[in-house]
Image (cartoon, rainbow, N blue to C red; front, side, top):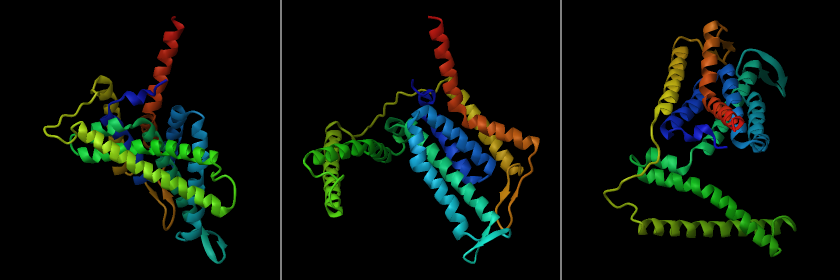
Length: 295
């Protein structure tokens, strides 16, 4: 079933992703980072299913572990020394900062994974086509070439494997030559495809003036409702930051804001704002189940 958030107006969707990506980077609060990480995980599982497990284990988890381990080893700031490693102090503050940095990076990566699933090239052209048509074209073509390059690389690899030139066997030098041959063929194919695409677009009149853009997206009442909820969540975030409801200090000593009812209320609002796509999918799933039960 199609993701419900995929049908939202691209402007509203872009604002949502901007908020979801910028907030963890601006406020490295452990509680907010945990909320952001959990919300991104839930939505990624809805989007990719079991494939999300492989993505997390191969890409996200190593980034988290590497960041969390390396930061205390190289960052010795902080006044609470836990132990010494080769005469270098390992402090509580550096460990907490490393864990927060790891959660922030993982959260950003997961939100970008969701962004890649939702934002297609036509949505980017819709957002930037009228203001920066050249930039929107380059970005949309770049997004288009990523899966094309992946599929073409597999085809070239299978063809060379059938000819006995695969990268799976032989000496290191032979496998390196096979890999370079695949890379050379892939670059040549990419250049030829780019020239063909440019000629095709020129033949269709791209770049002529006056130029009109077509967009199959409308701003309806549902988009206004989602936009209003996003605006409310961003306003609450600004107020919470302004009134020091969310504050944290890592160095020289670790200090975090008190857990008050207002802080708990803000965390709930922040979680609901990030769970808007999940809530929309749950509502659509319930409606689908209800319509099937009536048949």
